[in-house]
Length: 113
Length: 113
Image 1 (cartoon, chains in turn yellow, orange):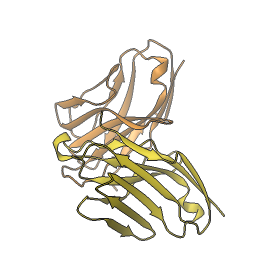
Image 2 (cartoon, one colour):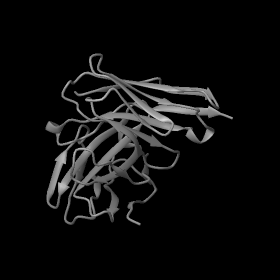
Image 3 (cartoon, chains in turn purple, blue):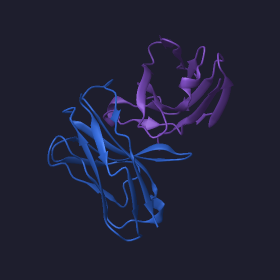
Image 4 (cartoon, rainbow over the protein chains, first blue to last red):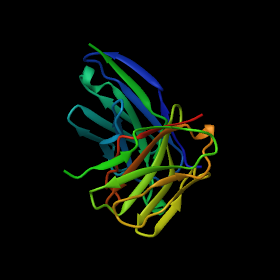
């Protein structure tokens, strides 16, 4: 089974802190790594995504760091805000699986005011 | 605005009953997916479709079926509901393309008693 392992399961930070969520994968054929953000009562929505030919991608306060040799990638949220409180999922897909996404188990982030 | 709608939002059913969850998208996307979300497991793929009359099994397809008679709809049927199928179900759609994001509905919470 193609797995993506995500940690931590939950995370609490103060406003302005920099929460970091980590994911690791085993299948080196994965070539697309998105992060999804989910608010209570809503479906997940794409936040940011990266391909393994770059080591970092930044969109606003959200940054993905990618370490191909370690088969790990992480999400950093700069200057976190209470409105960032949500569940975050990492995911991975590969061309040979017709782009089906394999999701991590999710991280529930709480940003305290 | 284009959207993806799931109905009902909440459903309680008894063990052994057949249940159908509806999913309707107005994005005109070829790809449609059904996931279940359970704590500690993230999102797991049940079934998916890449176009009309095309359906495929995902990671956790046992006890579920889908049919795709038009572009807009992918109903999910639980043939004989079991308590293990108590979960939150999400439908999603996407364009064809390696980096096309999934657009999720807001989910159906199903309880099997």
